[in-house]
Length: 116
Length: 111
Image 1 (spheres, rainbow over the protein chains, first blue to last red):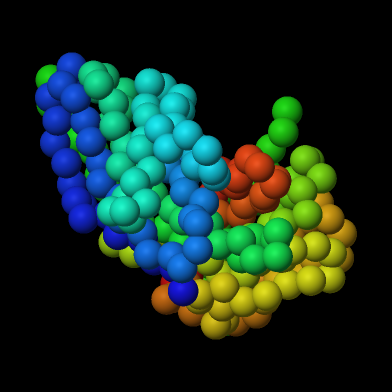
Image 2: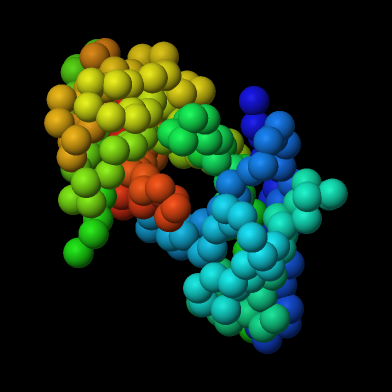
């Protein structure tokens, strides 16, 4: 079975500083990887996804993530954070079997705090 | 607008009183699923459905039922809710090559 680890429960970053959120996964085949963001009281919004091809993936809101197979990682980055980026971030791995989808396995999330 | 719609957004109920949370998608997706979100645990899959009349258990199915009689709807049924089912619930649908679209969530409190 697949699993996802987000090692940092909380991260505090100053506004304008760079950001990296870590994500490590465990899955026996080529993974399908996602990053979602959840603002307080809101649903989940897809930031970016990796299915195949270029290992550096661009997403919305200026985020990017890099898939590193050798490290089983899919870290999320942003060069300069804004106060509006304060939210909960979830990494997820999708299991595909026979072309169907067995569902997403989520990490426990990283709570991002932005300092003025 | 392509979306997944859940109702209700908020629900307070008493132990043992059957309830249904509805989920509907307008994207003609074959795949739908239900998740629950709890602090410190992230999101965990309850049930999923690959197509009409095809459902399967996720990681935490105990105490829940689902049905998929038509492609657009995937209701979550709690036959006898208990306080440990107090949680935030999300419905999602899936499209090949894109990923998952989530509903806005249903916050359920069982007292």
